[in-house]
Image 1 (cartoon, rainbow, N blue to C red):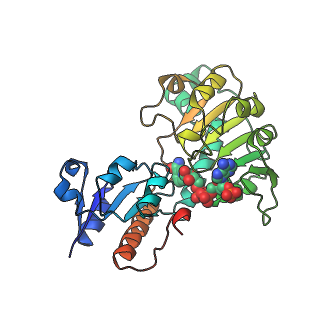
Image 2: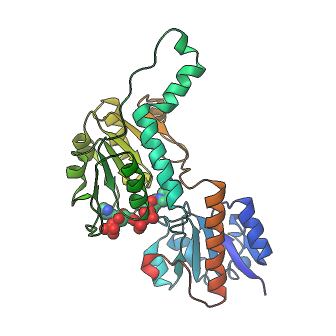
Image 3: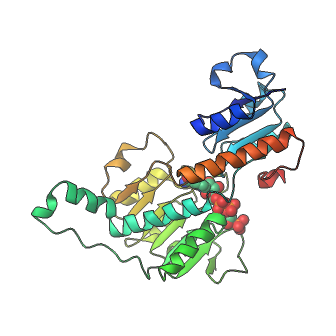
Length: 311
Ligand code: NAP
């Protein structure tokens, strides 16, 4: 019998094909007002942008799985999930390299001003002038906020650039040689590039605030790969305008996909549209792992990658 699922975000075409081949009936938001259809839904599927709150779950009495095609699941109301005895899965690991690659691309982009240099050539400005001098990345000090899968992969790349590495996380990592800080302002004060790679949560909300930005200082760069909620964005915009920090490279935003026009106008930023895991290879791997989680759930087998709270 075909299983009925509800997609809570748009899904890539290749994933829709995988679902159709797997004989799933896929409902979307247009069915949200049809209680007949909703009562047949037993699983939700969506990307890391999924918003699943208590109100939605109350409309879906038979949902027992939320399969997130992404590692972050901060849009899922975990208290409501626990109350309804629903299991949540995600796709850790398969996207780590891509996210670390983009993080490092952003470190190079903001330090060496690669997008601005590209624009300089395209505009024909080179004819009249030489491009500004930028800042050396090799050997500069790198700070990581979060030393999980992605933090470790970024550190590995930074090591190849001879960058001294330090980090802040909830707990020190005994297997790593890098310097540990138990608070983010102290870490920020000691580094040139501060890269954020923590989950979005109540605990990490506005972890990067004015105090951190002041500690990072006039020569420091902020790179956010995590979630928009982790950075106090108005405080960041002010700090960039006042040159409290040298610049920022951001893949995630509080107000994505709109993005504050003031931020978009600034010259000392590099902005990417939440694309850290967006390669053909990785998005296929994420979709395949999501399908494995769905299949295991309906087969009553062990779920490959439940989120930590559901393990
Ligand atoms: P992970 O392996 O679970 O690592 C998370 C790290 O964050 C851990 O080191 C953890 O510390 C630390 N942390 C958690 N809460 C903290 C707090 N309050 N203060 C300081 N550190 C804290 O996760 P991951 O796979 O590396 O992914 C990290 C996040 O990256 C995801 O949750 C997602 O939001 C984001 N992400 C973004 C994109 C994108 O497209 N831009 C793509 C993928 C992932 P402990 O080790 O001490 O517990």
